[in-house]
Length: 232
Ligand SMILES: *Cc1c(COP(=O)(O)O)cnc(C)c1O
Image 1 (cartoon, rainbow, N blue to C red):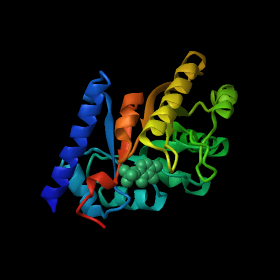
Image 2: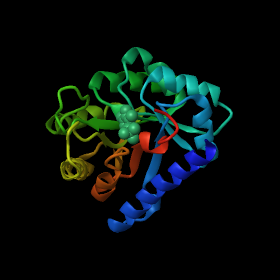
Image 3: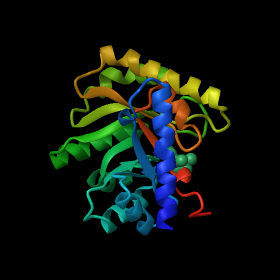
Image 4: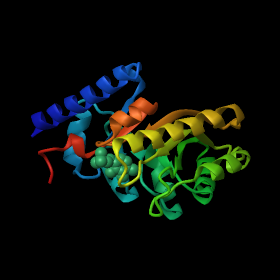
């Protein structure tokens, strides 16, 4: 089982390296976030032992449970799914980065929590590029308009943007959507307030990581490709 995981991981890293090279980028510019939502604590531990220090969870309870069970390991936990405000406190305690900053009210709550902890908290802003109704996130116009207000959240470090391609997007459509996120990021950088350094682009999952890296992703969030043959 461990060797299958190591093989899968090597294949994913190879895909990342190939996509980066093709885009004229260094593989080291892209961080793999291994999404452990399909697997138990044991497999998450094996992933860490195989060299993945960045692990992601989409549900707050799971993130907290795994982070507590593996507390002795220097894992960076990434919260990648929708977060309700009443669960925010626990996530801030355990996560090193929230990818899914998807509403003003959530960000405001995170800012309050970070202030009380006397510790800044790192977040990305989620952009709803596909405009799927079921997806969370800001749309482009909203985000540009909200920028000055986001500057008031002085206890957050806003480090970039996150997005998911549409449910039925082809690879070409996905790449187009990801490129729009990068262009939005490039437009926001000259006007970003002091608590923002929009360097990170968290784009791409198992099926479209190549498109994401071609568009400039600095983080890819990969789950199922790591666990092929291990979970059904
Ligand atoms: C589950 C999930 C992923 C990983 O998806 P795979 O297709 O399994 O690689 C990435 N991002 C988010 C937000 C997720 O919920």
